[in-house]
Image (cartoon, rainbow, N blue to C red; front, side):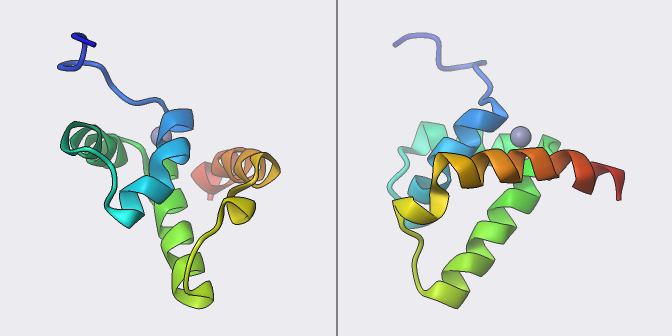
Length: 84
Ligand SMILES: [Zn+2]
């Protein structure tokens, strides 16, 4: 992989990486790209804070909590939040 420098993460990729980010297992390059995406994307910033809240309530997030259906629902909700 030699395309790292200016390759921005997509929202779908951020959602995919969020547990690794919160667990601190993301490699430094991806972590930097993740945080850069949050600055420019309110939807993903909101998503991250929702996951953080879930973790603080439940103690941890499992893969079951982040099922494809849940991710799709959250991604769909971004559209509603952006209107609020
Ligand atoms: Zn995003």
